Length: 410
Image 1: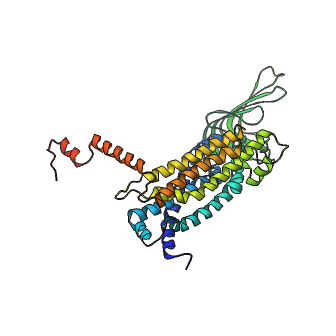
Image 2: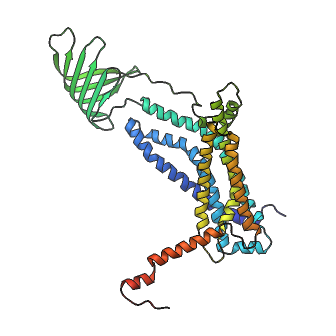
Image 3: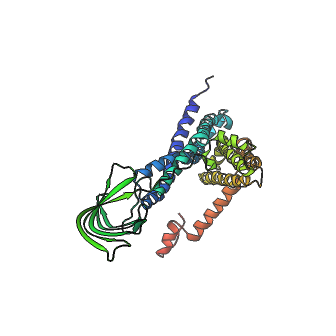
């Protein structure tokens, strides 16, 4: 008997399309939401637009680690929901295929994607997160260039203030210039000019501000009156501030790889708080990956609606359950990291409870005749829907009543 049958290939096609579609949509939505805030941040810090794409690229592993479980769940759920609503699932059952047999291909998906997600959260995401934080630091420290905001007084270099009224041609043409500088020996220089431009020099630590058609006022402690000079062109050298080096990787738990977390957690010379945080983050990553192996059972239990029903309550409930479990794990990680509860207990106890709930739901749908694990919720949702429709009287009858025509039975 072949291991991969025509039924398996059919289920593979049914699962693959919604899985990829859901994963792409989830990742795109998360990236689009973050993109807006990154554009605002980069614009406020005066950095180039290309930095936004680099920062988003470093966030992709983090968003994939969230999108892969949801894509896997909805891919399996929508595939089996299609089989159930088209009565194909009843045919498979009638020819002797159990639910567990039908889950062969979904489990292959779950094992493969769990391994991929383990590689992402264990090794790829920590490095990508560090690179993202490094880009944020470089933007704030001015490593991508002098940050001069139009219409504001900007401190550029030491004891040097610059104000630009207008900027054109991507900063190559500046107008309405004002420069104020003060030296250590007490000399003061104030310059106003119609035009200006920043130029590079041979010294990487210095840039040149070339001013045109302006007036310079020079004052010093030994001057009786300030000196005033009109010029057509004047160069002002600006020493760039030294840029602080970014910290080494590992300043935060999520920047450590999973092997580094084990090494820190097992190092008795480390502070107890640091070891607890390392173990909490380690177990958090493991339970998030282990949970993916339960998703085929959960998807099947929520995919099959009651007979003669097309209710989509299971789709909504599946997302709620997965997101809720993720939030519980985040809370448990915080509690374990603070040492209130042992990190192992804090993270694996919710996993055991969640696994027990999923396996019970699968047992009801697979082994109880006519069983519906969310049957009570289906009945409640149906009653609420009927009440709402009755209250607001949607449909043809409400339109007839609006125009004053009597309602007749068809």
